[in-house]
Picture 1: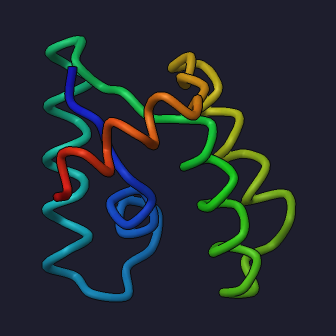
Picture 2: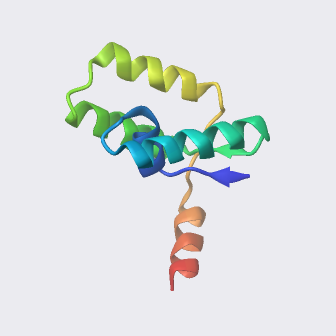
Length: 89
């Protein structure tokens, strides 16, 4: 599986930086095609917050989230945060 964090999702939906937008499109589309796409419910929460801060229309945000719900995002548990901290150290 290939885990995509909030930053990549934001660049996927937003064209603030064309190079990053195109890279996010490429990475996500390839992961989906390969059946390797993975996101978390935390990333969905963060994505909706960032898009709202960017003043994206609520209906547009809901449309993006609805697309992502179909990918069956994984819940983040305390053990995941602890493991991420171990890896970071």
